[in-house]
Image 1 (cartoon, one colour):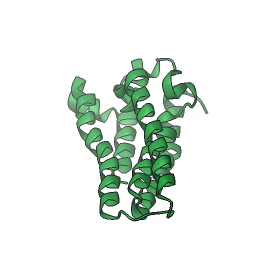
Image 2 (cartoon, one colour):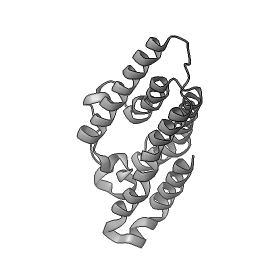
Image 3 (tube, rainbow, N blue to C red):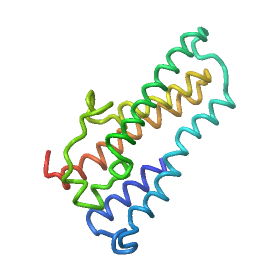
Image 4 (cartoon, rainbow, N blue to C red):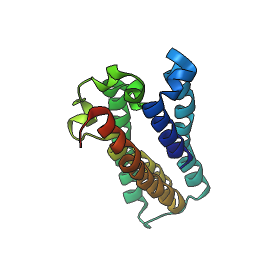
Length: 170
């Protein structure tokens, strides 16, 4: 939750006041990356730690949990690969809030983005569910559910209005 609150604040301040660019000049995105990435990495680590401390079967059929967890984690890895290779990390970090060049780039339609316009929120976050299922952890499953819901709250309350502002689309 802290991650999304920080992102919302920084995105709004950058988009409407150019705050990071005024403070850090051409290092603005590098500073943002140093703030953003540890918070992003903390998400799966938190689910992993919760899952590790609460490993008890969810369904009673461990094979189903393992197969479903593996499938979801595989999809998430594919989505992250698509982000790094096709979308780029700079765009994923909100580059269009910092540079007009990112806003003028065409939509990505390769990898996971060939099948969905929002591979990061819709597919990559399935990895959190995969971790919970692989460990058979109810608490991690609840945490994954919360993070999945909260990222969509972020999408509709922060990203969608920002995209309308940046791209002029409704």
